[in-house]
Image (cartoon, rainbow, N blue to C red; front, side):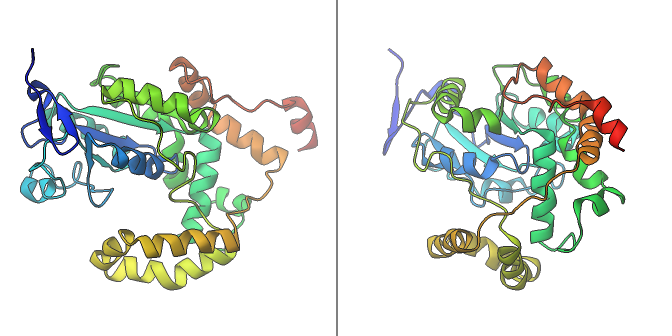
Length: 305
């Protein structure tokens, strides 16, 4: 019988441990539920998720300062997984190579989202952090340089670099829509993929951990939190760990509401569908059936325009 090691509530097989190596990565996609997933995995007693959530090590400092990188994980206790969640890793194909070089036994998770919905969510989040003017309409924005937002939704240009290196038993792909449709089924599939002890899906089951707020919330955020984040990141990271601050943020969101997305004109929707035509086709090839291309009468739209 295989020997088991117990450390508190953590049980694992010695052969499946990593020798001071991170072996679980949420590599994308930003504005697709990665913060929610990070907090869920953090609740599991066989998984040690980093503090803070996003480390931006690969594609930046790797392979230097590895001891500093490892300081974000509790290697003194024996967990089955040590993980981090940097949701922009998927943008860089070199990061796929680096993670595989660092730990070829690592497991990766990518959650996508309807490319148009993800783009819109990021658009309003950029307003919240002051990167886009609050008064800029979506139509005005799309007339300028939009590559830094649109490119994040072109999964067909980014995910293949990871799927070529990491086989299906090492790379878990799902969508935010699948999570919303059936969170318990998503959680069960993820538990099976990781091979960890089955536990019920932690509560709350479908609450966003990093939502974009209404216009009023965004104004308050830019006036209070964003300056701290920009000028004193260490203090900002400490604040993120504060339960009181997290409660205050969620309460403020309840009072002021979430972002109200402007209604897309038929012409604008047509342009976005054309922009992501290959993206929808790519998602279909991955059997991500929870995301589908919007359908409408193209001839009618073109006639109106």
